[in-house]
Length: 292
Ligand SMILES: C[S@@+](CC[C@H](N)C(=O)[O-])C[C@H]1O[C@@H](n2cnc3c(N)ncnc32)[C@H](O)[C@@H]1O
Image 1 (tube, rainbow, N blue to C red):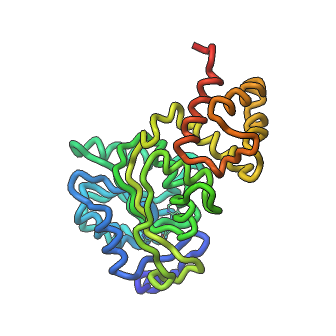
Image 2: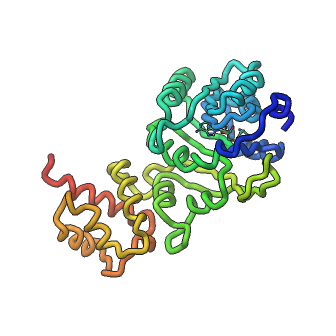
């Protein structure tokens, strides 16, 4: 990539620096985002700012985050003609569960500045943080309407997986209970520079926060799924008894099994997201019984 070479830089694999060099794919990703003047775009990983500038021509505002200060400096020059871009030089995440406060604050300011605004995540994501970026956006309370991102193919398959398949787990249930995730296109390594060792995909998510009914408590649901699928091959009754032994008597899990008609051999990986939402809501209710 000419810009990097010009600045004497080499791509950093520890930061997932695989740049999208195929213009057709950049066009595809941005076209699928359906950008317009009411849109505030969050881009995680500005790189040298090429896609950032392209999106700035179509969106109301772009907030782009780049951790690498050398790339941030290059991108600053590239986006200079656009006054609707805010380029932040920081880690997009504070930790694996939260965005960096400055990122959220900047997004809120931009959203407030445009009447009827909506948030879209559009990015060629650094693979190491693709899961927390996508899965935490639903927790921010920000009015997101679309995510279009390039991510590792294997991760895209885990996000869109169905029950009883090897890829099905907490991530699939978490996202499918709040959105419609779909793979728009599979990408070979040749569309990036340098070429990654893995295949990639363009994934799209559209929100559906009550797709299977209201999730009573999102943080409880997230914790329930993570712990439940941590023991995906074990029988669910024993796992649940262990998980909530401090919060309620073991017999309550037997009551729940009876209520849902689960057999003794029930495993979490056999259950549809819809059922797991209902189980989580019921457990949340049981745990809060008598606290009103
Ligand atoms: C896959 S590259 C995409 C670059 C550019 N948007 C493109 O499509 O060519 C990912 C970018 O994310 C940056 N990055 C890596 N980890 C990051 C983090 N935690 N927060 C913000 N940016 C990060 C990398 O430095 C890199 O520039």
